[in-house]
Length: 321
Image (tube, rainbow, N blue to C red):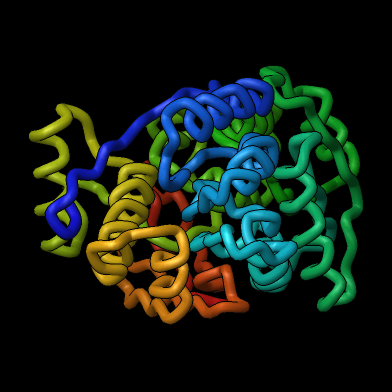
């Protein structure tokens, strides 16, 4: 526990549905009387749950989404650690387009807050090199067939595609392109940076680029501490850790450090007081340095690029912001 007090973790499943997220938030806040919401996954789901939490003075701590709304507009109960999809794409899209000598950059994105953030960021970034999207195409959340979208981009001669996709859609879009003998440069956001892409999508996924912060903890990672951690995780849970395992570990580790510093009389205000002078140095997973203040609610806006090579994510750039 922390300062002699046990920490109770209550978990609800929103099934990635904003309506269910509202019900779960109401239960957690009103019945369970939670102290804090930590690591809530999903942009639309967080947007739906935050008003319920804020009404009862419950902090939204380090949600697992990189949407700007996780720290903007400012609210004293918001804390985010994830470089936004917007900034990730604003920085990465023009860099990769230039590096690849792309002539026509296009986008396929999920028709919701998440997808729009990816699209807007890339659009803003491309402006800096005098480019704009040659073609845009969208899909509804939950879609499984992407042939019309991919054919549209192929017909437009797109040689680089920015993906506002998560897991299934990333695999679906790239898999469809490969079947059509179509090989543009694909760039995804941190939402597509997961080992599930190459595990489920197989060799067809080689070549995909994605932005991210912390690195996926492979069992044979070059770093000895990461290897040790990953193998310990494997022994305990009987499955390989993923980047989500790292997010969860990092979120609770940070919560414990802050709660510890807040002292025996832990309250929302005492937690905020510590958090607002907090500096989190990079850990073994290679996240960027995070700093917070009474006016700064995003720890870091830096991200980096990795590419799937031989069925594994490999870091191919330093941090940029």
